[in-house]
Amino acid sequence: MREVDVIVVGAGAAGVAAARRLQRERFSVLLVEARNRVGGRAWTMRHDGLPLDLGCGWLHSADENEWATVAGELGLAIDPTPPPWSRRASQLNFSASDQSEFTAAWDRFDQRIAAAAKQKADRPARDCLEPGGRWNGLLDALSTYINGIELDGLSVHDFVRYRNTGVNWRVEQGYGTLIEACAAGLDVLRDCPATLIDHAGQRVRVDTPRGPIAARAAIVAVPTSIIGCEALRFAPALPDKVEAAAALPLGLADKVFLRVDRPDDLPVQTRLFGATDRTATGSYHLRPFGAPLIEGYFGGKLAHELEQSEGAFARFAIDQLAAHLGGDFRRRVTPIAASAWGRDPFARGSYSYARIGRSDARAVLAAPVDERLFFAGEACSLDSYSTAHGAYRTGVAAAEAALQAVAARA
Ligand SMILES: Cc1cc2nc3c(=O)[nH]c(=O)nc-3n(C[C@H](O)[C@H](O)[C@H](O)COP(=O)(O)OP(=O)(O)OC[C@H]3O[C@@H](n4cnc5c(N)ncnc54)[C@H](O)[C@@H]3O)c2cc1C
Image 1 (cartoon, rainbow, N blue to C red):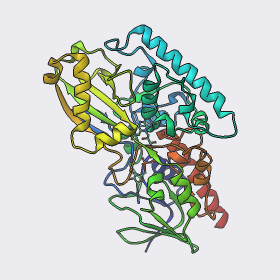
Image 2 (spheres, helix red, strand yellow):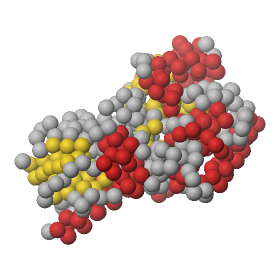
Image 3 (cartoon, helix red, strand yellow):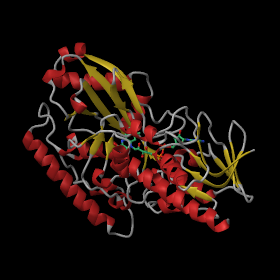
Image 4 (tube, helix red, strand yellow):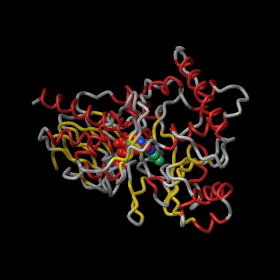
């Protein structure tokens, strides 16, 4: 049986960060990854030389985001252009005065959430909407992009814990490219979904299709969906972990990329909402990086529905966009890629949210077991959950805890 100091299960942002930290201390470390690529929910595809991030794209809280530092170390370029959501959106269907009204409605909503979160009992953020408010549909749509769920499922306790410095940058070559580049030089077993982690003995044993692997400690860095549905099991069983993972399900967000011929009439780096009066709408980033592209974003129930049929994201996006950009637009546009994170068996969703009253589950999930099993991944982060930098931090924290535990036993 192969033996290493530490085995890391899952080569996403958290697993890669953990393995890199362990390798720096000259520990033998093996990453076991279910897919044939590293990066997990960070995934850059290339189309005609254009990088398309189907998963994470923005270095959120970029001024304190470790991935931004790693990008610099690896010689990747950072684009600090402020994101479209921090600037005026297209006025084709959303006048400047309506945008100001909407921003004010968001600020009032945010204040009511902050006040509600001070109460002991958790509540869904929907309770903080103004009854009959004109912008409630669009506020709900934003929740589907930010959290992957509608406001009726969003915990105010969890939401206010999220830390956001308001600075957002992009990696020109793609966020997925960055995490993949960071994994160069790490020992990764690809196409190798772990099925069982046996932590009963002195050594942890991880069962995989390529046989068992033994280690002095294991770091579990798979999405909560995988632990919650027991695609990866533990022996002895860890019902607290399974329960915590189930309390932190993954919401859904998906992207579509469209290529546009003769794009010069489209404003660069600008957001256009498909509609401003409902939850079920796409949000479209026109010409990211100035490229001849439109990046569409969909969340929550709408994303679930569109995942059900092939090509549905592109059809929905083109219908919404043609209504504002004119009939000729249909002839100029070609769908080039779309994600379906909910149907992906190794993600089963996009990013974690806490069920109402269950924000505490993040700490339960992150807690080590017997100083042999450590947990990482975006859902383990108390204040940067749902992000790649939150995942990074939990990976490094798990690696440091494993280092200490192994050294103490040596
Ligand atoms: C559409 C979309 C947009 C996003 N936008 C942003 C953004 O702009 N900025 C941001 O910071 N974040 C964003 N995110 C979230 C970000 O991508 C994730 O939070 C982060 O990548 C999660 O990293 P992770 O390591 O926790 O999990 P993952 O990336 O999911 O890594 C877990 C790994 O475990 C593997 N695995 C699963 N099961 C097994 C098994 N049984 N055995 C072995 N391996 C297994 C998976 O294949 C995967 O590689 C976005 C996500 C999506 C889907």
